[in-house]
Length: 253
Ligand SMILES: Cc1cc2nc3c(=O)[nH]c(=O)nc-3n(C[C@H](O)[C@H](O)[C@H](O)COP(=O)(O)OP(=O)(O)OC[C@H]3O[C@@H](n4cnc5c(N)ncnc54)[C@H](O)[C@@H]3O)c2cc1C
Image (cartoon, rainbow, N blue to C red; front, side, top):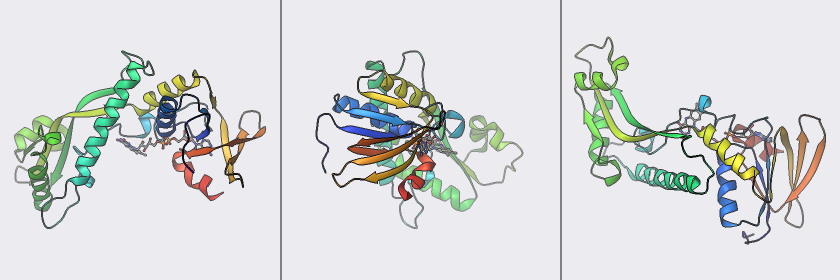
């Protein structure tokens, strides 16, 4: 089935950053579509997307070592480049949200912050140097610096260096153009914006309990209102399960 332009009925399960982002994009590309958002809690962005429940790092592969896996040869940075490029697109999207007044000017959900990777021990120091050598030649990472100098790292990360022997092998990379993102605040702005658009209904304290694909290709959604315990059945053309940790149990029903 392809996604036809028009009055498609779409259900977004969960009101975290994923559903909120998809909802805004869908309304941009298909303004006529109808969207129902079901969230089991009383507030959007209150699970993993809430600022207290994640680190808030804007993932650009500046400091996430897992995007450049260790190998005996040169470090493969293709994944890091892909992630950094995708994050640039996210930033463009968020700038656009300001233009359409989806997020409020002055109520920033994003801040600039230095991203650093700190390692100890010979093999990790070697890895970080190899990673740095591969990365800093790329325009996306050309502001990255590397040091093994205790004094410099102490200036960057005083608590990490407290009480360390001067003989300990340590290294650090640092890049000043990282970001810190409050995904909870961003989610709530987007859900609030969506709730005011024609054709969007946001159901808080509504839990999706079952999903069934009908013979005509539509989805039947069984939803429980957690406040008054009533149950409802909705039908739609497309479903997005953005229920975070709850997604698997919805898939299994
Ligand atoms: C400790 C930790 C640190 C992290 N650090 C970072 C980081 O630094 N940078 C980064 O980019 N990402 C980070 N992440 C990942 C990021 O937080 C998640 O990928 C993101 O928030 C997931 O968003 P989501 O919308 O998929 O899920 P959620 O925000 O969890 O939203 C899912 C929503 O679905 C609702 N729901 C669940 N079941 C149902 C149901 N049956 N019916 C209706 N609603 C339902 C939930 O109540 C919830 O509101 C971190 C995650 C964790 C746990």
